[in-house]
Length: 160
Image: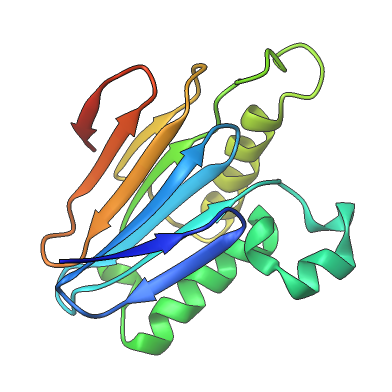
């Protein structure tokens, strides 16, 4: 199996069953894994911020940095590979309050809220998630099986 690393503010896609998409350091950031089990097509997005209006120039160059530009790009890119919306399995992780930002910035919560609004408007259901709390996560998507694993800095490893 080949690991394909998804950096912060990045997304990767694959239709190769031997690939595993992996992203590290999901703190307040959100990881979204989408998978079409019939075609074995998947994508993984690691976005940092909820709203591209914070920096529209950066959003043009790095659309995966923001929920409102990265999420549509993830889905449209998978559709171009042959995935179909009605078959997609969606799993998410991240949105933690790492730096005790719960009282002021609340970036993790804002990222979760932005994602949910986008999904709600587009009739996308989340099958499983591991969000919130106060620890970092590593997220991986196996293209052969669609299995999504979450390893937390709290020391747990689980499938969602």
